[in-house]
Length: 198
Image (cartoon, rainbow, N blue to C red; front, top):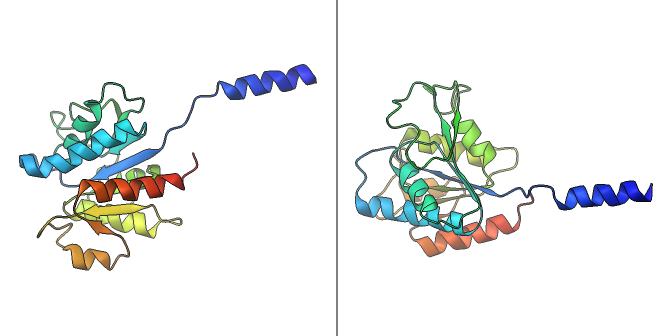
């Protein structure tokens, strides 16, 4: 019996460490400017340096910028995960910086419907950073807030930027913080992740 306890203890000691998963969501527009790519890139890089996994929708735009920043950290221990919707152009999904593509059968015509990968993105993330985007990004914000246990989410908007047609003031009505710089995002993530047990 004693030997068995020692063996179990040894096995538990070598059990793989689960890492926290941070989702980054936002526009899939291919023509993002350098300034629009900069913050997602820096957030992706920070996620890698924090030894977390990055989760995105695996496509272009904000998703690619965050994944590129993540993969720029050669010493990272986490993975760049992309949840891929069905029926998207293969030259864009997954983007070049996705290390673990999760191919789904979900087309997502309705961003909050049962056929949307947005549910997977939100339910798999321990915290989420949202950048400007369209109705798909807004749906993910709404899903994060509506979860049985709400997923910590911070929105990053500068100037007149919007998510799903809504500006910062309207989005604050969801009860989520809206920030405009990297330091505020990092402060939010540090606080949120400190309360996460994986």
